Image (cartoon, one colour):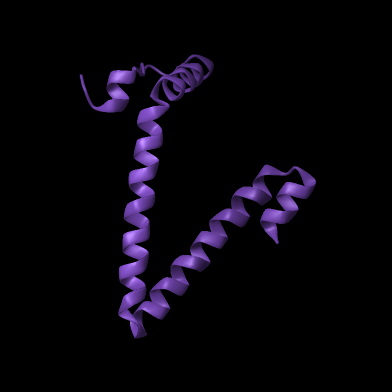
Length: 92
């Protein structure tokens, strides 16, 4: 409900809180069902690993755009840390 209300009313806090509670509920269900069925642990572990690899591949592909966005935030909030594409890829 919170996610739909956030989308419909254009209120980001509802969207964020709805997403957090949805993820929390999913994790609780995985944990509770995992006590009885071990295949749920296997499925959720493999799915999480695959999602992590996809996320890292996406970051690697978009690292210049991510770096530009982080530098924009850096200049907007006057952070003292400078982001470079080499820093995001782990090559210094």
